[in-house]
Image 1 (cartoon, each protein chain N blue to C red):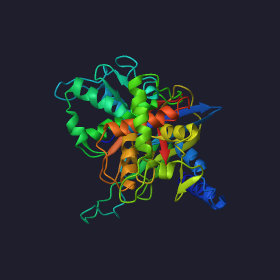
Image 2 (image 1 turned 120 degrees about the horizontal axis):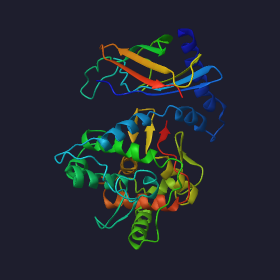
Image 3 (image 1 turned 180 degrees about the horizontal axis):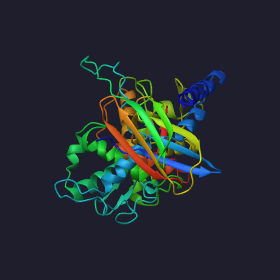
Length: 267
Length: 103
């Protein structure tokens, strides 16, 4: 049986290198690798943890999140993520999944949002929030992305997001669009979606949150956007701030109609 | 206490395919933290899978296996509703055992 295990591992190693070896020039393609990884996506472990957190009474108010309204009614998780960000009347804000969950954690469980905003990625309450994200997005897998751009507040955020996307700043005078407005570009082996087109925006939006195999971390869209700012060498955005939500609305709204593939798996 | 595994087991034409996702740091003992101190080795050493009470897989794991390991294997036999138990032990003596019904 050990021999069989070894054989399987060897087979996997060969299969992993072949897309690279067979790729010519700019055709570096990790799709086959990603496909292999998707079967055992460890994001599922986060999803299990998130489901547990959703149902566990926690915080100063010792409450669960089962009454949390993600936009489809209190406690409805099914398909909720595919329709976020959206406008919420109770907070009078356009909120993405992270900011909405953060609101629920504060309103229902009494966990102060400041603790998450001032915290670090993958740690403490912000780490728990990521597990909740994994749980919620998994229940939108295969659903079409449906952002309601007819709402004036959402449209306002979309326009703000587009401006932020094209706004050049930082030590290198980069905008998001510097890397994400042409087809077929990549950084090292990572293909960069062209977010100015619906297909590219959908590609970006529908593949995060994702588990990154190279560092064994699960990254939410907030985490991904924060890292884009960091790579841009500019001021890092405040967690769940308007600019991050605006960029999300822009990307999600442009990708409307595409199928959500959450949670993703990345190299 | 270790986190639960996700186990999926499906029987088809007398063969059961099992897919297991384990939650484990799998530290090699070769890495250092930001202050330069060695992060102690912490990895799964042994894994067993039992169909009802029959041992169908025994494996030795080591530090070269990735964080959150994924294991897929097939064994002859097994029917819908049968019990499948996967257990592991790590080098710190921590262990985890999870059970599923074959689908």
